[in-house]
Image 1 (cartoon, helix red, strand yellow):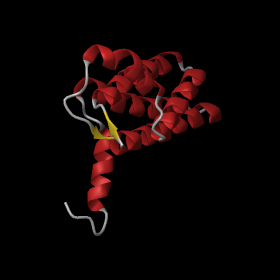
Image 2 (image 1 turned 135 degrees about the vertical axis):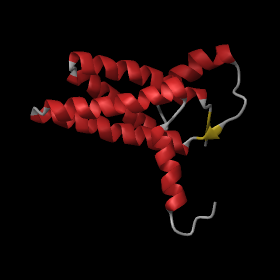
Image 3 (image 1 turned 90 degrees about the vertical axis):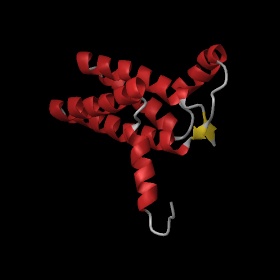
Length: 136
């Protein structure tokens, strides 16, 4: 499966805004909503990607090239883990865990949105390279 590389960056920009609001407001419900978005994205059905495809991409035209969807999907799964850790922190009353996990996810989303540096994608590629029997 291939993806327009601009779509994950668009999603990361929205995620950055959502997680920044979570940090400012400590909104458990907003973090829960973002957790659902991460879960859907990990399965290839990101709501932000659908918004991009429907409303943004037609205005930009087709991308110069497509990229493999597996690294961004893995990155969404990593975001899901951090969002779940943040929810756990809120649930058990551990503010440092809640805000720290949310801040880590925010940092990763910001790096992708602002600079095109997808930390989860890079993790995916590194893990693939380290698998025994893989030639690169």
